[in-house]
Amino acid sequence: MPISATDADALDRADSLHPFRDDFDLPEGVIYLDGNSLGALPRATPGRMQTIVAREWGHDLIRSWNAHNWIDAPTRVGDKIAQLIGAGPGEVVVADSTSVNLFKVLSAALQINRGRSVILSEPGNFPNDLYIAQGLQALSGGRVELRIVERERLAESIDENVAVLMLTHVHYKTAAMHDMPALTALAHSRGALAVWDLSHSAGAVHVDLEAAQVDFAVGCGYKYLNGGPGSPAYLYVARRHQASAVSPIAGWLGHKRAFEFVDEYQPAPGIERYLAGAHPILGICALEVGVDLLLRAEPALLHGKSQRLCTLFAELAQERCGLYDIEPILPPDPASRGSHVSLRHPHAYSVMQALIGRGVIGDFRAPDILRFGLTPLYVGYRDVWDAVDILTDVLRSNTWQLPEYQLRHRVT
Ligand SMILES: *Cc1c(COP(=O)(O)O)cnc(C)c1O
Image 1: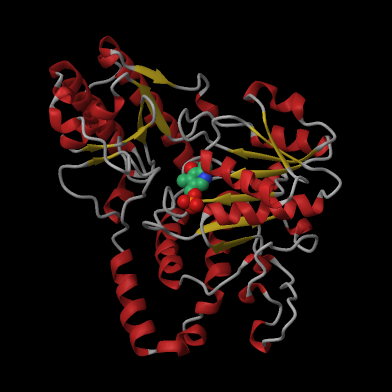
Image 2: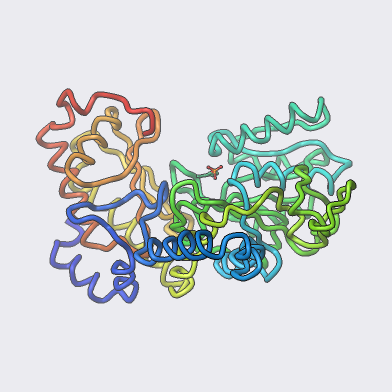
């Protein structure tokens, strides 16, 4: 066995990120390995929500837009997220969902690179992102084309028709991480722009948008940023592109002078032009609590721990569950992995249901994947050890075959 339970305890004691776990309100008896689907609740969030609801909304009412600076919330929290992803102030804004933000930045990239028409992506990208591109294609009346080529052929496929390369940095199933700087540089050298989806990256692995000269990015608030269910998302537009395109959703809060209420749309000069309707204040302020916590952690420590947790999980699973049809899907090089581990099993859905029944929460991704998110901020080495121990027991005892674990829920 790679290490014992006692060794895992020792690793936790030596881990300077371990104390962050006390900043989260995790239930007793649960090993939470799903922070890449819905991050855990920071202990500070309910109090902050209480203040915003009771005092700012309840008592100060509409005055709060000025008195509590609600109006600046999207850029204030955007500037904080910028620090997590290597962007500068004024390059990130919090708004809408990742899906809507992707629509906005793809459209902007196509405006800037208007002589070209292809959005290039890969099969098996998070389907949502392909759907958004398909929607844009349909709306364009034939001008825009989504082209999907296998990962190995992406580089050679960036030809003179490609306007924008659209990729997710860390793959939602396999955890394989693209070489963002290299692919972005290659896109630029062929006259294309790059849009990156950071949903499975920010808050877990190293991201430096400025160093990679990334053009546009989007990302999710409810995963590693711990913003809560349906948290608003964020988008990044490199400063050099901000004046060159407009949002396809030309809403009033993206207007240069929203409160002059003129008939004609004029975009705000900077990143604020990507705002549309009224800011979701409760959601943005909940997200801010999660982001503030992450900003206290050393980014290099986060990524290093994430790699060690993933390696440990995969080694233990291979060693202890290899006999039971379990096959870890792990990019070979630790430096090109995200922060989750997927295991293939022919009855993955039922196995995950049985695991959840034993307090180990991960998720199932169709058709045959057990996925375990190893959030470096609050998952420890002993959690990993115990989770694999319970998984081994579930497989050895065949409890996953019980009838109650066969029923498919709507959300997996
Ligand atoms: C989770 C996730 C999203 C989420 O999109 P929303 O519209 O914010 O729900 C988008 N893209 C990827 C790659 C994701 O993993």
